[in-house]
Image (tube, rainbow, N blue to C red; front, side, top):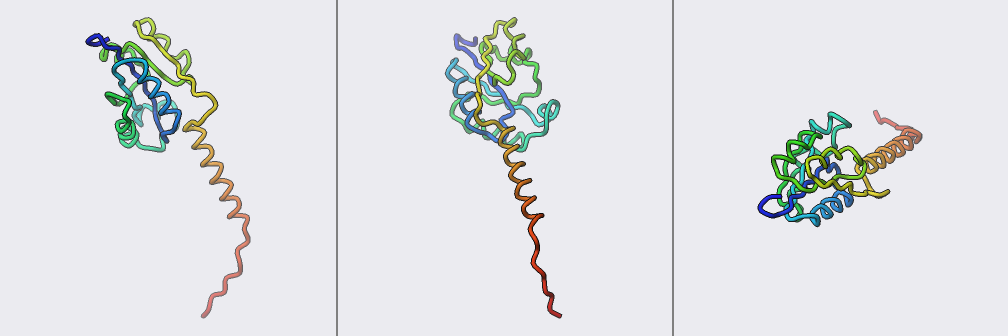
Length: 153
């Protein structure tokens, strides 16, 4: 708490920004007075999964353009202990694909919410659909018989 206000923190990669990202940020906004959103740097994301499609600076700009966050900052670590202490965070919100991962923050007096994404859209699903579509199109093109080409001399 800072100046009697509840400080909420949420973070993510926010690659290929979609409706579930927006829902989580909007949900986090409703849990307190000040919302800080961390955007994972490219270096951080690459430490545990494939690189984001959208570069960090663009993902940061997208989140900054939303009406819900009060502050948008780079997220450089998956350990949130230091940021919780430095920014007086009371509430931490993260997608339920991380369930249990941030329970250690409760020992610091932080309320942790795992936002339920459900079976809806995700960046991973979007990427897979694009890849599947590409492979489908490529196989059709490669299977197509090219007409004879007549070159005039």
